[in-house]
Image 1: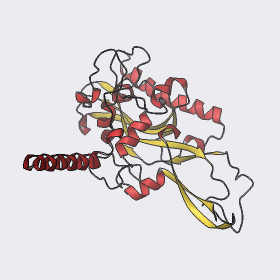
Image 2: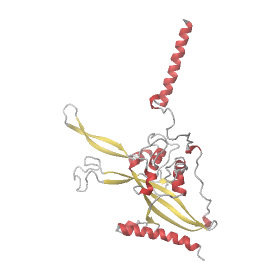
Image 3: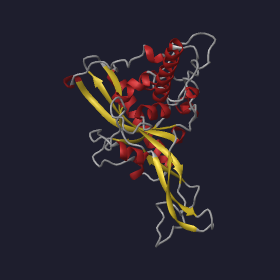
Image 4: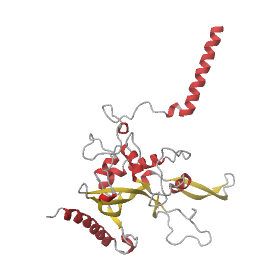
Length: 314
């Protein structure tokens, strides 16, 4: 009887320990039973051995020329689809936006260490608070609150809708081109990147609706609007990009990370919307026609190419 009592006490203690462990890890039903089944062989996680490749060392005294430009990467262009897809995470395969969202980790708003900071200014000097960042990544609308018994409207209540990574349809990128006279080479480095979310215009019942003036004629639900997430210092983003494998359209077996694709291969299509100028204005500020804006963008690109080619003219 005494042995039976000790056995029962041991089982109760073990049950308590496992139950406590489940509370910490979540329900056992939510735990994966194996790694994602994607290959016929054991796949080594790219994050286990990949670190960002360091830029070539550069001294200010060796920079004899530099130029700053801003460009837009439109994910609707076919060549940029490896950055957009998959729209939903599949195993270890994630889109660029999903990689950034996971690095920001808004699922744990109290977490402050090990997350990717987002800045409120283009110079990346003023970090955005977690609360403000949550506002940038969500939409607050007001919907009627209905009495379940009478069916009458008794007021308004707020509805918070969080944006999804698949709603990021473009990126604004600031980069600097410079010539290193010591290495005799023309380099380019991305300084910051800014995800742009495209979402549906809120209805007249949302927080943007003016109760006194009503909504204007253009306030039609279904109109797509753009929203800036914030500025991300690219060097702080690179460690997360280097650990995420990207789909290689040329060879699936060749391991390629987002850092390889964007930083070094620069395998994306884009157009310049601004160059460094004394007026600090975009191309669209002084050229109205979209076709002429693209022509101006190509002129800036040709100017950079011409400068590099003229360096080696004999």
